[in-house]
Image (cartoon, rainbow, N blue to C red):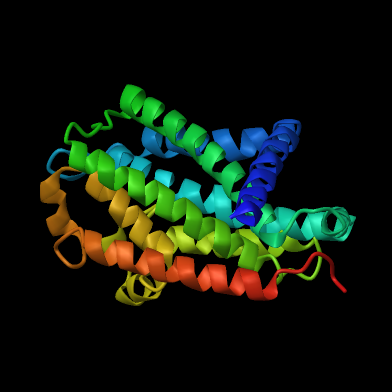
Length: 264
């Protein structure tokens, strides 16, 4: 029990340090927190069409951007920054401290959670203020939103750590990771209405968690009758939870097995 307490304590301390380091990098702060808001303004201002009774594209887009923010903040950021930390020798130096792999994971998860909360608040505020996003009044919808954010953040975090071994160097990590994220965003219904995509794209996207996150967020912020516009004709909330849990377990198993403090 004492060992577990130490692991958690060190992980929380590491998370605080991760946040301080992040806030000192102004470019990262702007890109991570404000880039989704900028996209919201661009797409929301250009595409004003009504895609279903009582649903505008901007409302649809906000739900997708909240889900996409989980991927950007967790998967993309970690899959890029961890190889850079590995190349700079930062991880190798950490190996010589009492910090365990578990504590390091907790620190990264804490950073992702804080950034995701801030990003979501910004998107909800501007979505409601500028693009008539309907905030839920039903407590059940807010409960669904909460577990979607928690499960999505956890899933995105472990998958980002797992994928961090793929880039051969920190310098080339962005070139490897960013195109994958952009493709998944297009395929998963973030930038386009999902059912308007070709069937093969829908089937491909259904393999990955982002499609289910976007669908889950739509169930929270769009009217109940919009569920008939989904591929299955329903929100598939239970299936969303199961698929996210499966990806969480897969990502965690791969992260623990493949994580390296250095290239050697």
